[in-house]
Image (tube, rainbow, N blue to C red; front, top):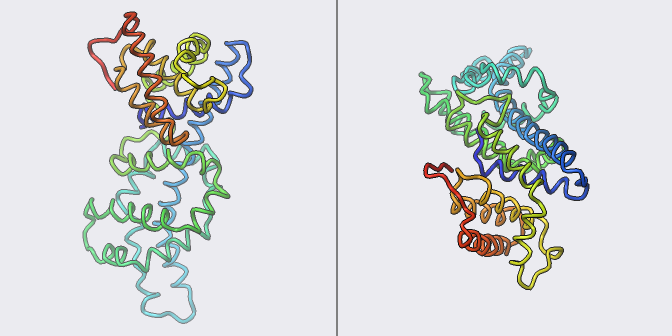
Amino acid sequence: MISRRNIRVKVMQTLYTLSATEPENTELAIYNSVKVLNEKLSDSLELFSSIILYISSIAQYAETDSRVRLSKYLLTESDKNVNTKIAGNDFIWKTISNETFQQKVAGASIQQNINEEWVKKLYQQLAQTPEYIAYTEEQSRDPKSEKAIIRFIWTDLMLKNEEFLNYLHDELNGWEDDKDMAFILMDNFFKNNANINYMSLLSAEKNEYAKTLLKTVIEKADFCMSLIEPKLINWEADRVALIDLILLRMGVCELLFFPSIPTKVTINEYIEIAKTYSTPQSGHFVNAVLDNILKDLEKDKKIQKQDRITK
């Protein structure tokens, strides 16, 4: 469900989190790091699932709104004719009927993340939009329209509401750290919501990649630094941004110990991550250092890549 770049970011964040407390015992360091990585992946998955539950709650609030308005003593025509079409939206029902989604919602504290006042407020805003009115006037359930209105709730109601985003920042655990991952997961959700496993972000292959990368960076820390430090021209290792050093260590490990990943892919990926998560100059810095290290490794014929390679 997530790409290798997303995994690299999570591994980087894990190493950064543990950088101040990394024990000298390698086995203990690996144990702690895998535990933290699993926690970070779990937090991302819970945040993603909470967003989906918010959207489905907003859609289903149409039925609550209808019941409340019909219970009034003096009914208006609009009270009598609340359109509840969105409560049965095919796209969102495929999601909430997903067995793994049901397991996730039942087994975690996700329900507690949903603020009913915000559900009501966002639904009321939705009901006034031209997009929603046009949706309710359609007699059929066209798959494109079903998906479009759910996407509209996410992109135009939730993401463009600064007050709501501030609420998520203050109240939803991990929002600030994981929102970028959540955006990626939501893009994937709208591309293909039918086959998402809400109990795990990673396939077996990607899980193995994540754990192996993490372990290798820890085990090969001294060796990697022996290759990196000579390339830090005019820089001392302790003056380089910590995230940059972590990304360099990860990059060196991929160049040497991951034969299925092309060297060009490795360098480009870590350049992009450095640009996003470190300083404005970090992309250029990581590029220069990794490129110089790669040239030396290729000269010494230490780079061994498989003929059949995948990103």
